[in-house]
Length: 97
View 1 (cartoon, rainbow, N blue to C red):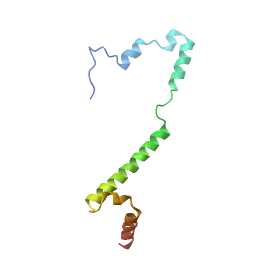
View 2 (cartoon, rainbow, N blue to C red):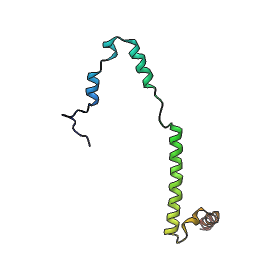
View 3 (cartoon, rainbow, N blue to C red):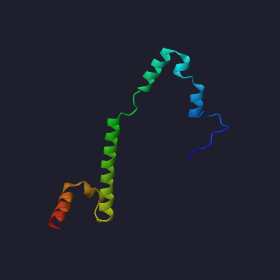
View 4 (cartoon, rainbow, N blue to C red):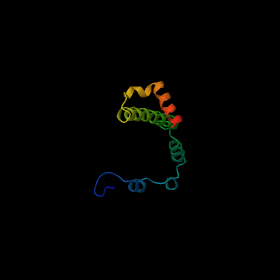
């Protein structure tokens, strides 16, 4: 939902653009170089770290979902999902079917 900002003291992007002079009007080459350096700022959280966080969250969600499903629908203990014996029984069941 977009809020109407007319009559407020908060500046919009359009108002800020109108207030700031462009580089052609000032003719100051130093201002242009400062602006170029600001455009290449570093990220707070690098992309690789973001990908790793998403992968960890996916694994945690799969484990929690398997625990809830096994305890609710399977009638077993939730911590049994983390045991290797449980998964060998499940894969054996799949292979025999």
